[in-house]
Length: 424
Length: 109
Image (tube, rainbow over all chains, first blue to last red; front, top):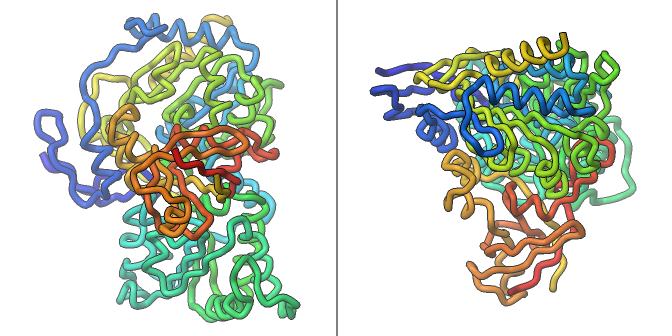
């Protein structure tokens, strides 16, 4: 069977033109996807897996009971992950956090959490990827490397994509890369500004000052001549529709949310001259959905705590790395993410010392050391659901193969029902 | 011993290897190396493929050295368990560890 217009759930591009061929419930071919997307589809498991408790295979009711015992025994449970699951499951995870008085945080906290703080400070002058494709004649990639992390972004949305006002694709655009190293993405740019590491804030402030007509007393900022920054700014002011895509080169370096606040302020101020937007290059397939769902359910995008019976928000306090490194969580429910593979060692190591419960299609590094492992179907491959693209546009994920595993949403429903029964 | 600025980040190889399993050789090859400029490599007298010890204030890792398109004085480690050993858990009230711009020492082994 050939399925067309399948949405790839790997990264925030959510490419919705994938062709998947299926025979005897196995994926035999994947067309149009990038190497990451192909690998995701072709390595999907469809065999039945049992949940485990302390390494022992058990039936689902016993596994759910063990998970609920750990979560209800804890004084300060943490629910973390959410970025590779569907919005339907994200809603259930938030309901469970509310029920337990738990903290809940998504992988945003270690990718674009600072972006959310910057947006709260400054506002977000943004647009959709469709507008970029059809209108943008100037595209700036600042501290991001789509050639490695969002492989089809250039072709589908931002650089070579031909749109109604950009019919010649690449020829109709000025492409700028700003980075601390000449990345693969920077190699194809018309203009490359190589910054000194950690100088994004100073360079962004300089651009804002130049935009306001301030005469600077220095000739170089962040390793770049001010005259080059002035030339770039003139191009930005004179373009028809510009966009800055930004990534973890800005969020993970010194200044963090202050860099983002400054970048968003620059973009907002450019709108006095032309149309300009900014967009975060979101990593995981539904990490944007985690922010959206948490925000519409609680008012906050990440780092939330329900201990007082209502949502409190505080990055640095209720964020997963901080709670684990400070040993403040005493049980963890990890949904569709792998903190042992991606957290600083001190935080990752602490997960060995508390009961961890993992919902994931893969036996990832966190699952390998968890007390309770609940293997689930993979949204977008073996389960349908909803995911939000990096421009916050929700797209329906298809099911292309059958899975004997329940979905994250079903498993979270079972956990919620049992918590309610236990506390009744 | 020589001092560098360390940045960590995604690579296409790391993203592709994720789904082969994080215990796979492909994932290890994609995440357990450090990139450095050709001139830094020559200055330290290290041959490509040899191992070096990378040390930060937070931890250390022994990694294969590979030539990379990097400015002199900068090294790159792909995100993954090896990079985690070099990153601290202090987030300065943001939730985000300093994953880029760390000071690191490189010692040939």
